[in-house]
Image (tube, rainbow, N blue to C red):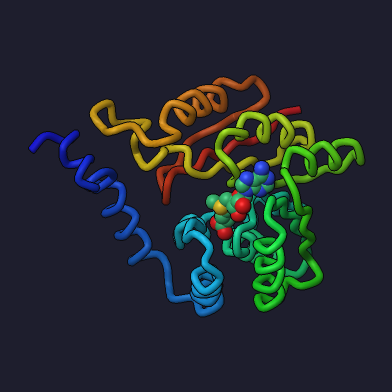
Length: 227
Ligand SMILES: C[S@@+](CC[C@H](N)C(=O)[O-])C[C@H]1O[C@@H](n2cnc3c(N)ncnc32)[C@H](O)[C@@H]1O
């Protein structure tokens, strides 16, 4: 059977899945709080599209290593990545999270509260582009960004994040491997394959960014902003 046929049968990303399963099994330990977040997402009939456990751990480490204290997230869902980001700054930081759906922002807020970040997170509900425009007009600045909202707007989000960034800020974008299809000519293209190929080129060649792609979860670009 050809690789393309395997992909059509759902074998798509087989290697990626195996590698991620391996990384999760070796480097991730059970985490009751995050497990409860995943359960709450299911209970509320929401899609299970939080970042992978190892992606979450990497987010915590990147915030912590960079020393970021003022984090902006685009796409909250149930708060899984929000908790991981907040763990990186501990008691001494702030998360601003942009979410389209009010019910999702409320669930994320509940989950962040349960995780002990009640007074360190604020949600801006509505289309992220509107919230970003507001943040720009208020001259806000952030030192860490996590972009995980609607993929079609990634390039717009990237441009806004650069405007809102302190010099040296970090910008992380999720799902940039489009389930591995950006790298596999024979794979059946996924919904965002072509889009992510173009986006990765933009990130890689942006004159204000120094960037690399880390193939954990569905792939993350990590960029440092030069201003
Ligand atoms: C992949 S999920 C985010 C998962 C979350 N970052 C996590 O790992 O826990 C994408 C989220 O983006 C939100 N979203 C989609 N379009 C949006 C928009 N235009 N503005 C703000 N949020 C949006 C969705 O409602 C959804 O909650």
